Image 1 (cartoon, each protein chain N blue to C red):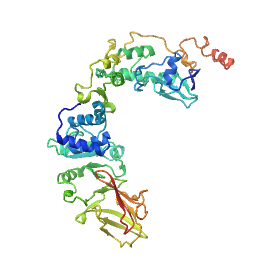
Image 2: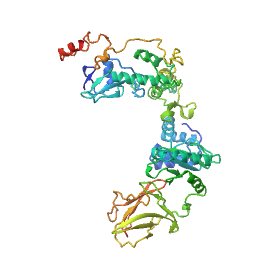
Image 3: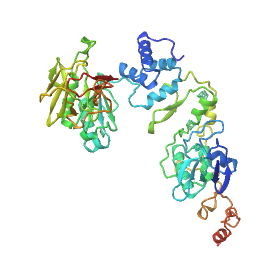
Image 4: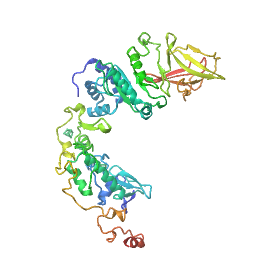
Length: 235
Length: 282
Ligand code: SF4
Ligand code: SF4
Ligand code: FES
Ligand code: FES
């Protein structure tokens, strides 16, 4: 499967997802509900990427989207980053005490959360359900109800006979295990571990996941196709 | 095994249902819900055992659909539509009127376990809204003032018929497959049962036709004399849709007329006068 991902042509095996291809090439796509040992869930929407060309592009979750012939992917276009930030804002508003989420916010340079915090202890990422089913083969917990009443619990909210008390669900949970205590009711964001490295040249060049911060001078975005083009960009 | 002791009644219901529905989970849960008016905990566990599925999957399905409930429901279930069309036509006022009349909010059940109130988001017949459904009977163009009457009517039993007496010939209650309006006429009895009332046209004539509601009876009454072998065009008297389907009569090949049976299924009859083609599809 010949694909083009952030300007890099790549011959990906058929069974690869976009995320696999990106990771293989060392491109950074933030994920939350993806785990190597589990089937992809597509629940958190943090791993969105932009596919397609021209104005016929759309956002898809890279962890669930299989590569296809001739696919063109951009992993850090402005649209992608905007969508990711909005998703992360919503997730943090749900559970501000999650260290995993706060870390992601720092990494992605999130500066504000415009939603009312709910201080819940679950973001419905489904990791625990998949862990319990696929690795522990217990199938003790699952999604219950739907829509805004969706929650994760055991049948009848009672101790489950299927549960092995292995603790794997808690081990994998991004919300309950690692707590961040820096999130205050006023700020919601902690930013204690703030890391200012962001994909840099997006205002200049939307097509590459570049962290050089040199606005074309480094030549990362030089694609060899037309010398004029890059000179133009530098000017 | 989730359940160690099972009541024989429950077991026979679940067994029969699983056999009938070829292990389809939702159909089995529907049968249980219909029988008990809710899903008892034991029943869910028993289904999990019998279908060899994890309990959490069955619980997830049962909690996903609004048609299932874990709390005991009242004898009569009133569903008021709050879909967009019914909403702008005053659906919320109807809900308020019911709430006032019965003292229950949507999702609740009266203390005497007689009524449960539910809301729905569109029942598919917006043109005749606001809609209230009581025990599967549709009331259209409901106004808040009608609520009291509907509830009284429910208490005294909607369209009482004692089906038990007849085992082979049974009366069906049908409604229009398009608008869901009941086609039963309780004022005119044919074969001692409320008849099915539709409108028909043939040649240049247009008028009503009343059919016996006994499945297997061919008694009819008609406004105009219908010559033998005429193929009728049949219409719903409420929404005026032509009642026709792509099923062909196994005897004469005419396109058959579908009627929806309340409680599930469709009955088809042949619109040719004198032809006895009919079929039941449940
Ligand atoms: S502790 Fe129980 S619910 Fe959690 S993963 Fe293990 S078996 Fe599943
Ligand atoms: S409990 Fe934790 S792992 Fe499970 S869905 Fe919620 S946030 Fe995800
Ligand atoms: S990692 Fe792809 S949707 Fe969560
Ligand atoms: S909105 Fe009530 S039936 Fe459609």
